[in-house]
Length: 119
Image (cartoon, rainbow, N blue to C red):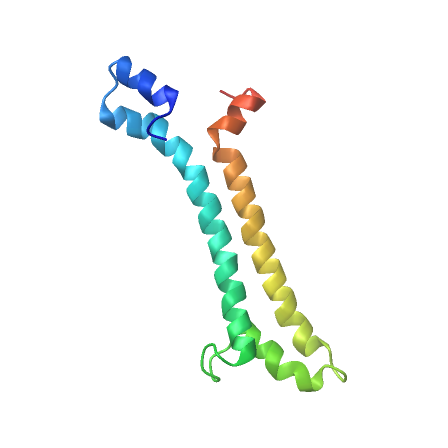
């Protein structure tokens, strides 16, 4: 972002380093950080659930969605709800974080606000 035209224009206009950081760099970096974080959290949830399903996650007395699904495999023919609800919790949580990230990115991205005519 350092070599972008709007930053060079601000420097030529006499803008201080603090002004460049606060007015130009942060608004353009924050949407990328939000997307990165909101994609990292679901990845961590899926990784933990996968490892726990394989028996490589948290120890047995502590609850984990992956270990709940693994332990319910024996009962899947008689009672599917044992594995259904932990799986649904994983899906809903991952989708919620992804949707939240998309919504925050859309709300905070200055390029999208300009294209919608809000600035």
